[in-house]
Length: 71
Picture 1 (cartoon, rainbow, N blue to C red):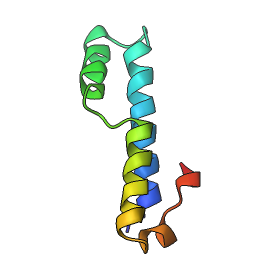
Picture 2 (cartoon, one colour):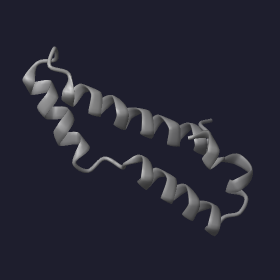
Picture 3 (spheres, helix red, strand yellow):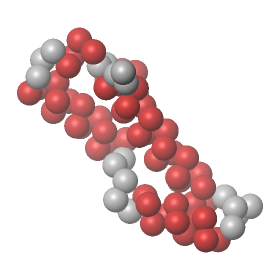
């Protein structure tokens, strides 16, 4: 089972990967454009962090399983 902090880390790393792809001139233009398109509505690191804080406020048990310091 995936833990909340693992999911958060995966989303943050995926955003970073898409940013890298969108800027890498050795990647075909179509791939760079696709990465930019996906990033338009992809959650940012700040969005993920905020969502985690809100989840912890509404369900204190989540604080046991997740840590915002691990992001």
